[in-house]
Image (cartoon, rainbow over all chains, first blue to last red; front, side):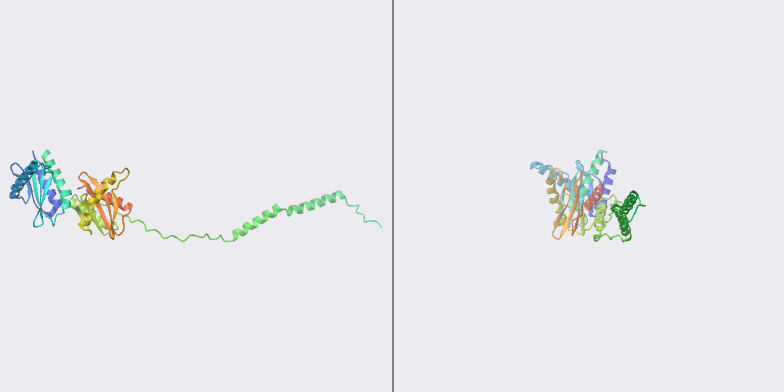
Length: 124
Length: 193
């Protein structure tokens, strides 16, 4: 059981932290690809990162590498960074403008807060 | 010729008178009496004389009173606002030209007047201090590092999410009191992150 209202509040908190550095975000269920909360939601990105994450996890497993941890980042063209957070049964994607968002705040503040908030929403 | 007769005198009473007279004279000139008078006179003289002025050492130049630094007040719950407030407070109240907040990997969370390259020094610096802290009695959560012409002073605070560092860059290292103020301010700020 996931409280979607708590997810909405978590997304709002993320927007407050990253401000205009956050271009888009989605939180979705990885089994059905259903987006539960977000800002400037991107259904295509949801489908893309569900597939990339599944491929990445299976590749890591097949290579006897340690499993995926809390998140991974992609440095993209046009001063963009894509972050995918592993919430277990849920995934979250973020598209961030590097020029406007601070990487330190993203990694040390925004992502840990998001992980805690989604965990609370799942356990309610 | 007869010798002059002093028969009318009583030799004993004469002798007694002489003795009395000589005794009173001696008493009047006794050293004790003379000494008493002398001391009284000298006291009078001393009173009349102005007291000698004590030689005072030249007044040392007064050390400048330590500047009263108001405690940091965080009015916002937003982490970015809190970090910006902390950096602004540091620049306003400490003798520095730059200030920053970084995580223990050296990633900048907020900064002003210092490059991210300099802030990134915090990562290896804090890693190196981990082993130093294993020495009993060594706290090593604050310090100063010479960076060319400037000195970076920093304090560290730890939370459940890891370590964070508040640094200030200026021509001189910050005092122990200033470092204590920075640490208190950093800990207050981290409560909302």
